[in-house]
Image (cartoon, rainbow, N blue to C red; front, side):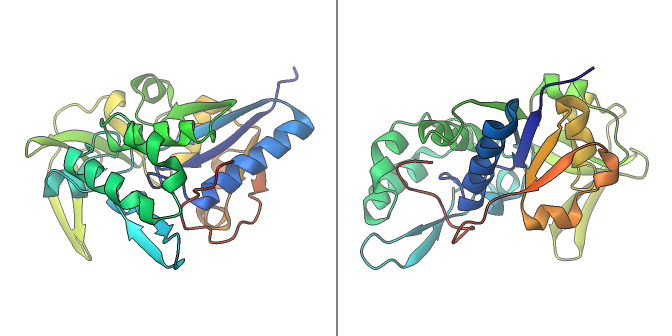
Amino acid sequence: MSTSPVICFGQQPCGFFPRRFLVAKVRTARKLQSEIGGEIVFFYHDSDHDPRETQTTLRHHKSGEPTTLNFTFENKVQRKYSPLYLKRVMPDWHAKTVRQLPSFDARIWLEQFESLPQTTIADFCLEMYRRMGMLDGVRVARSSDPEFRRAACDIPEYFADVPYEGEVARARVIEEGRTLQLHQGGDSFLNFPAPPTITKEQISPTRDTRLRWMNSVLHCTHYVCGSGEQGYLRKEDAPGITYINREPIERSDEAFTESTI
């Protein structure tokens, strides 16, 4: 039985303006869709907890010098360990950044940025991407979605979202589910007992199990990826996918702030 193409690309929230490599993935997916048809799906991995993922590099509109900005966080636990779909946007940070934006090449998006709802970091980034037109005609599948998690396959290596010091932490599950682990930096880890039960709604994948977990729900026929992803994707976990290199783009790690995607 023939099936319609499902063209996927994946990414964590990667700045309050999308990084240029993400825009390149979108462009590549749209070009492929124009050739073969089908649906485009953005696997939005907002279960990741790394605060570095949302660093946003903008350029001064006069000097052209790059400056890297990022969200501020309510507390240390939230910054280091909470998943991006639960890290909260701080009103003081938003107000300060609104005042800064006129100095940068993102000032054309100031009005849209200023009116964004101050909810969670993952929601905030996704809404900005939508307003910029990046997601027109694209279905978004979120790794934090309980329905997505329930539908996903079982995986041998995973994280679990668990209560921790008044927040929710994304902890690595080790020792056959008996222990949770938080990375404190360098070679330092904090281990503590896992609860008696971890449900599928709490689980998100590691880097090595992400492709299998994602594809068990999305059933991709084509996957758009960058050179970095090509280096670690375990393609044997998702046979039958055609892998497409994203188109090249200059200053790939910087924020995309142009008027048209």
